[in-house]
Length: 592
Image (cartoon, rainbow, N blue to C red; front, side, top):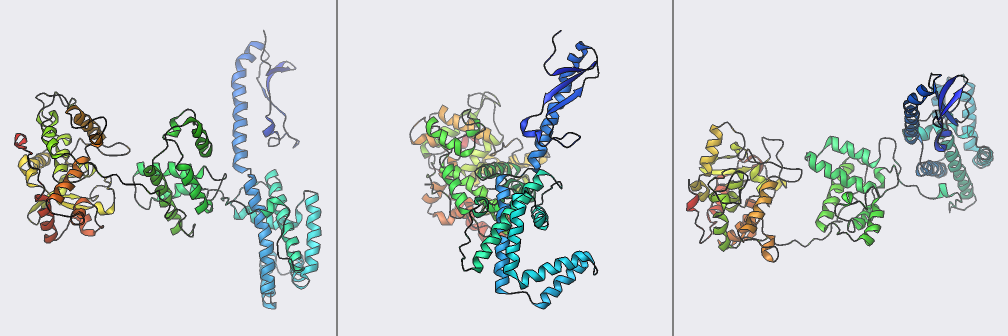
């Protein structure tokens, strides 16, 4: 029987043997502390057939151990950027100390304070305390000589890959970054090496300053170049975003939060690994905006782009030629990052918003209203006069649709409200206020409600035509049935309310010849009722500023949110609502 090449026999017992991957050999040790080159597991059998049967499970355990070790190494190993940050910080610390001592040399009182701290730490009779104090006094009194000695000492350490002279600085660097580092590990050795390089460069630059050269020239590129903003453990851009999501300061929905998460993750992908929020600079945001304007639609779903970084996707799309996202979508991405930055500003993690005034200028397309002549066709269609069934609303029949699909278009026609606003109405939102039936569009009394803006909270009087058509009777019937919502069957997906109605209504418009595949009428949709009301109000003599509050375009107010408008406000809005009229539109066939 032939056995796998992974199976070997030692004595009378079979084993599986796997070569340790090169990248893991220095992280996996033998009992003697040397790099592990091979991994063996006993199969605990002397029979070759049984060894062959047991081998797959044993191999699985070995490969699982490799993956676990690789994950462990990834979690503790520092990137080049993180090591550069450590070196540059050590360099700057030396120069900051040099400048501070020049500006304000320590007094006797300062030295006494240092001694008291040493006594607390080491004890009043400690030789270590005396040794440190002697070094401090020498560093102050003979700064130049001390610096020269220190440079010579660190050069020896650096040449020998040692680090006894920077032990405390290494401990400080580890603590400041929240790192978990095993004493004596290769990670600690790497940190020590880069602290040495940074301190040595700082000492040499300080010595040059003593000679009148303040150029701070450094030849070591890992020290000289200002590092990217590297995060402490737990404080990367995405880790901080999760803290933002947990707090959710604006109370946005989980769907909106997920969209924001996707946007911020896309931004973070153009930054160096493990960047902190300090890397969210105006320059980085401007670069991201540039890439967004070249970013293909639904890139994650296109095979050519899958699992590729953003910059590579943009470059590849110059060849592939997929359509790019719109300016409106670019602005949505920027707004998501902007909201996160606002939270960081409050926390003092950023000093100014890097995203302000960065929105793309998007020419707003004027809304397309329904031609008045087409309204009779719409309300003579099967949806309003009788359909084949509850599901087939576009085919004529005897089944009367009287749920949200029937009422939302009608209420929109006589109020200008958005379909999503109407879909969320509670029965208690339709009530009498100052002798007038009103609809209170608000997020109150239901934490799942959402509105476009704070200014969308408002009171809208019920049009007399809706009363005659039986809208209030419909509401009363639902109350008697024990329902809570005005449209209990209206549903939402991850993006909007009543997507089924929006989709089917557009198809209905095409079926009855109101909407065409091309030309101006191709833009008609359920939302066109809102623009139709705008035209009706203008024809009635009201200007846009007058009916803006009725449309949810006004300034946010507490009265709008809680629905306790003054009688005069209800009266003014009632005048506007009652003025909405459509000459030639007869809805008597819909009377209940």
